[in-house]
Length: 149
Image (cartoon, rainbow, N blue to C red):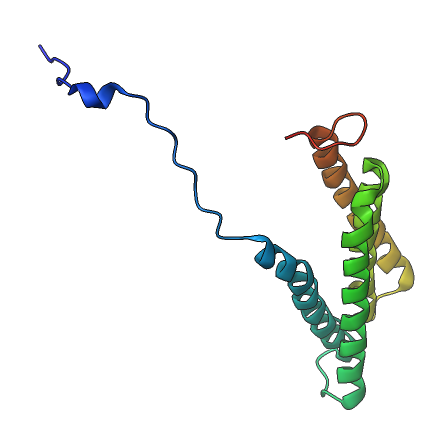
């Protein structure tokens, strides 16, 4: 028959859980608040310019369009990230989802599709993202809009 191994008396005391180190301090979070929208904006601008040229040659106007699109995306992304959390959860979700839907609709429009199909795709994306964000905020906030920790 198997028996438990004997323990020494020192092993019976309570051991405090070890807290994981915080490698992402405030400086990293502040840099990411600006860095992530800039990187996303540059990728978005390149993607929009590539959609617009449709596999043709890269021109100066195409490069300018990509940088202007990237700049507009960065500014709007920073504005949404800054002011959307100040709104109630419904408007917070709607603001972020409208930004996502408009971004996808604009990219789709640059590929040469009709405006109606671009608006329809943007509306579908907006509805899907709204559902996800609203569920997330609804389950993580109380009735007053305070985060539940």
